[in-house]
Length: 59
Image: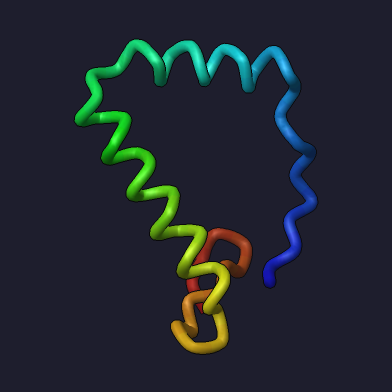
């Protein structure tokens, strides 16, 4: 699993993003959810997919 040294977003940023996403049409929210689930699934299977994140460049 890659290690990121990026700090977690603040609670206010998270709340603002949630508010913006809530304003999107349902189809767009569904698409965002699918993309996030795909990224999460890919990152969980990094050894099998060989798609690890390395400083912004796939190695």
